[in-house]
Image: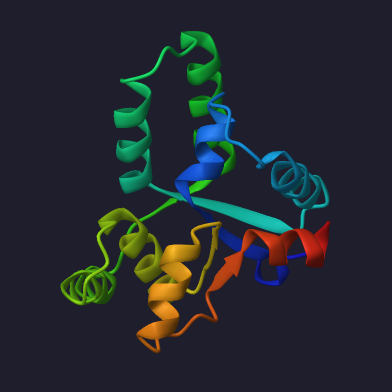
Length: 152
């Protein structure tokens, strides 16, 4: 399978937190599917440095296990590709923020997926509903239930 045949997934912070050893309720099934896809060579994973800043901010307020977090960070660095928003993506996120959605990081992730030809994996119902109400292109969004149904 060549890279053009692979599912190109940008992971929301929820899934990265799990990789770093933070328990996230209900994410186990999704993580198994993500592992299965990786083992099959059917996926390329992407992460945003903006997500990493958000995650490290959360971790700094928690009791975390240093070695577990370090191991997770190394795993992400070795397995995932870093991706940045395009100029168009930054502007799209800014535009959407002015329309009322509060979570700038989620908007950056959406805009990055949209402008970089990726799929954003999320469980954020508020984000999806906001985008739907704004008549935004949701073809780049995979809700985690969809992923589990399709590939689980």
